[in-house]
Length: 140
Image (cartoon, rainbow, N blue to C red; front, top):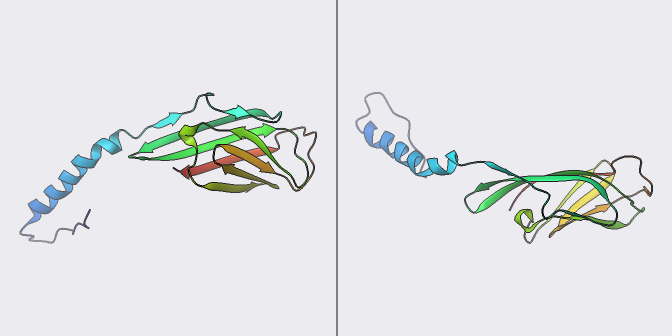
């Protein structure tokens, strides 16, 4: 959309500028009015390699794009210096042709295709609490 000019005192053509702004809002208003986060179900989330815990996601459809929020807290065996697959995510929130990586406390958590992988620099073979915690926000 071209940048609209503000009205000046005594503006001769104010109606066409205001009407253009109203027309633009009317055309895009449906997209704005229908913005609604879709909450996850457990469908499509599969914990791997003995990990337990919770995972959820939500997404906001905007045109042909999605804004995804994916988070969870898991507990399971991590070995020093090794990566382990901890879960799979459904295709509906899978980043395509991308790798997303974050560090949470000491662990590196990565989304690769439809898997979440955890890497730990330390042994955590018998955790007493959640040892894979993540919160990703990304666009697909």
